[in-house]
Image 1 (cartoon, rainbow, N blue to C red):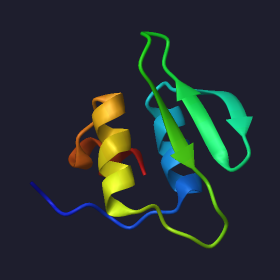
Image 2: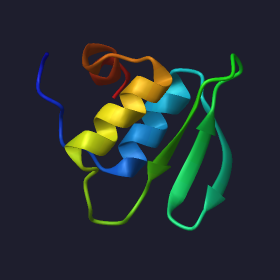
Image 3: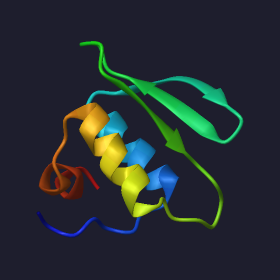
Length: 74
């Protein structure tokens, strides 16, 4: 498995939007993203901080995207 990139939450939200996800709501610093087919995930967005590797892996698992697909969407 390729290494997980270090990314801030804002970039992940934009990439997910390119993949067809929409912002359902914001709760504090967490953006809840939904896809029309029912998939969903929560992306923590905190200024000046990258997502933890495990958190990003969880987001990818929730969305069904691979690391390569995420890189193409960035």
